[in-house]
Image: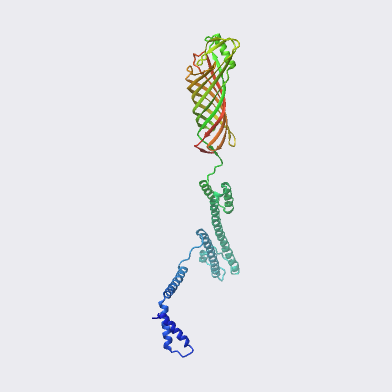
Length: 475
């Protein structure tokens, strides 16, 4: 069996280990070393490690060179532009001040030297030197020290004024910058606090730091303009709606006013009229519909819509005499009498129902009561159109159903309605409404012998919706 080269190398290694204590030739060791290196080179990971190490060395060299170039040729700015500008102005002012002091000292020294040179032995000053330096005075040699001191005082005073001017300018610039910084911070913080408090703080802080009235007014104007743009001041809002819509449902009950023409009414009919007044019960009904409301001014509004009105009237008579009237169920007229025994009684009952479609027109005013409550008053009238009229008569145990034909097709009524409203939300309110209504004309035609004018009193609910909201600002 042929052995793998690796096995041969292992054998050589074992042979070399056995002969370590003995004498091993240099050729054997060279052969072992060569074969070991070849074995290492034949393995893939050897080449991978060798390549990775080379790439790593190159990358380290590139990073080091890039860092050196970055430090030498690029210096990032770490301060804010506005801060740098302030520091540059301060450094420039200090540099100018130092130059002024240095130049003043040099000028003082030069003038002192000129005074020493221009003072002659006889104690006179030359006319040319006097022209060149008008500030110099003729001073005797003995007072030379006094002249130098006067020159020093002169330039010291001038330097002092220059320093005061520079300090005042620097003070104004720095205070204006600090005032602008405070103003900018106040403008940024306007959305998180009260605008009025921010304006007061801005005015106080700027008045404390800046002495120029014009700059104060300018900064305050900018703050107010910025505040007005970001958060408009709204002290209060009167939420109202020009248009609103609603529905109402009002059950009612009432009575009737009977009328008759004496010339047409015979004695028997007069007795029947008196009988009806004494024994007829009142009427009842309901009023429901939808409406639209338009607000004219504040609480003043007009209202109109369409409604359904239904009225029912009942009559019940009992006769205990010999003459029983025979009554027409439609016209309620007595057709004649029937004689019966005194011991026999007869009852008669009837019910008439009238249905109308009406168009109301109301004008009203709504008064606020505080909070979500309000009180409203309405008054107006309606045009009523007869839809249906039916009569039901029960006499002598016989039920008769008829359709009443002698009624007005069109009628009018007046009504008055107080109400209390509670606003649940901006666009929805519910009201408790009372209503009084009165027909202007009788239900029957003008040629009817006996005519009736119903009146009703009711109470119900009123639901009102205001989908279109208008916001009016109060100054």
